[in-house]
Each structure stands twice: as C-alpha cells, then as structure tokens.
Image 1 (cartoon, one colour):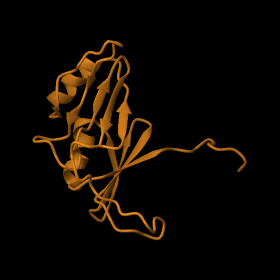
Image 2 (cartoon, one colour):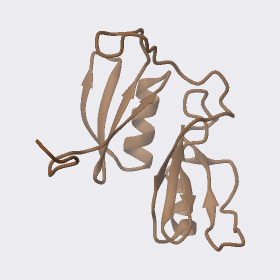
Image 3 (cartoon, helix red, strand yellow):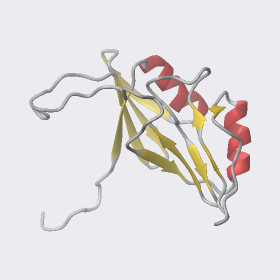
Length: 146
C-alpha cells in the first residue's frame, strides 16, 4: 500500500458509556442506527448511515492501548469531542427526534450566520455517560457531543 486512505477504509466512532443497554436504545431507537453485534455485555457495534459506532463500557489498558483507560466523562457538562450529523432541516429533525423520546437542552437556536442548532440528551432524565448527545446544525447539520 502506497496511498492512504484507500478504497475500503471506514471510520468508527468509539464512545465510552456507563449503561450499554440505554445507549444502544438511544442510537438504535431514537437516531435509527442499526445494531450489528454485541460483545459480552461490554460493547455494541452499530451502523449509522455510512459510519460505525462502537459503544463500550470502559476498560483498563490492553495490549493495543497499553497506557490508555477508557472511562466515562467525570463532568457531564464538559466534553472534548462532538459527532455531527448533517440534516436538511434542523427544526424537522428536532420534532422527529423529540417525538421519538430525545430530551433536548433547548429548542433549535438561531444564529446570525443562519444555521439553527440544538443539543438533545439521549434519555430522560439526561444521563451522565452521554452528556449533550446529538446537536442539529443548520441547513445541513445535526450532531452529537458525548
């Protein structure tokens, strides 16, 4: 192989969660992801559009990550990454996801640059392991922070 990326390369988002079953229900039942497999009650693999989601319950270092421990965020109001899902109509996505049970921090908020944005939470009440999941951004976007 002399080039990268090449045909067949795919990206997987790994999210550390404290309640695997609740997290699977959120991504599958609210967002519409497809559950492809689970591993021993500690992880689940989902397909969402053209991406993969790997939900894990955390864990100590392993041979492939010898100094890394996976754990849920200590403070649910501080995040260090965000997943963005683009949609053609933020307000419509907000209504559909709300009808499916997503709890939002606010209704869509309009900004001067013209792209509305919302941040739902994946369950009622908001959960510690998935703090500000799913943000909808503008003509085109809606994403998840976790």
